[in-house]
Length: 169
Image: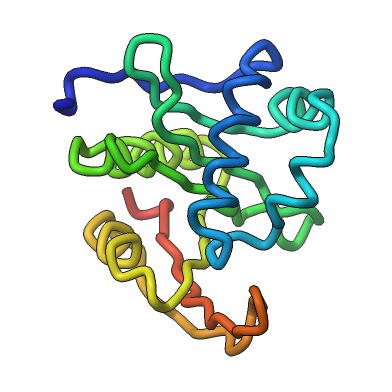
C-alpha cells in the first residue's frame, strides 16, 4: 500500500458499521491507548456509533472500500475554551501503518481544525514512541505529562500532552 492508494473523508452515519469495526479493533489491539474499553463499546448498539458520527467530526482513511484508519476532532466546549480543539481516537490498522495513513489523517484533521480553532491538543501514551514521533514531526509540541492517567489491567499509563498552534500557519 502506498500513500496514493487511499482517500480520506469525513465519516457519515452510514459508515457506522465500518467505524464500529475499526473502533473495536483499536480498543482490543491497544487497550492502553484509549480512555474507553472494548467491553463497554462492544456492548453499545450500532446507533451509538452512528450518533457519534453524526454529532462529531471523525475522518476515515479508505483503501477502496476498506476503512484503514480513523481520527476524531472536537472543539472544546465553553466560551473561554472554544479557541481550542482536541484530536482524539486515532488508530491506523497495522497493514496501513507504513503508507503515511497516520500522517495524512493528522494533516487533514489539522486542516479541518484550522477553520475553527487556534490550538489543537492531544494526549498520547508515553510508551507510544511511533505516535509521539509522528505528532512531533507534524508540529505538535509536548507541554506536560499526566501521571497515571489511564489504568488498564492493573497497570497505570502516563499520557504525554501535546499541542499545535494553528494560528501561525
